[in-house]
Image (tube, rainbow, N blue to C red; front, side, top):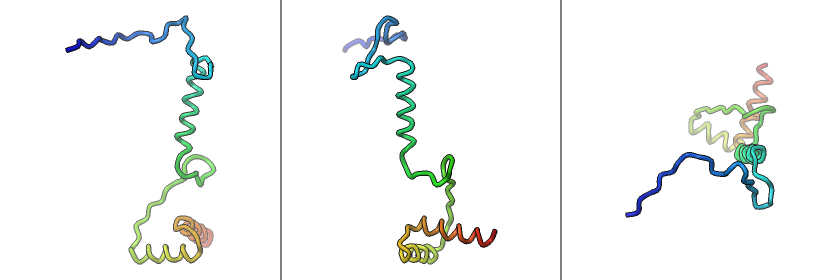
Length: 99
């Protein structure tokens, strides 16, 4: 059996050594910060776009009877809208009438 070498904590790159990416750019603290910001923007950009002006859109979960769900689906199909768009439109109209 081979004896495993023990890793000793220490600097991976000596202070006088300059690391570069494949394009020749120097990898320093600002390079790393920019790369992390870019990665986070890319990850956070996934999914559906927010419907709110700022931040994530609130999510409303509602239980429906099977009959009501079928009626909503049918009404949305008749208007050529998704169920979500149809429900948002109906709720907006109802809230304006109630307000």
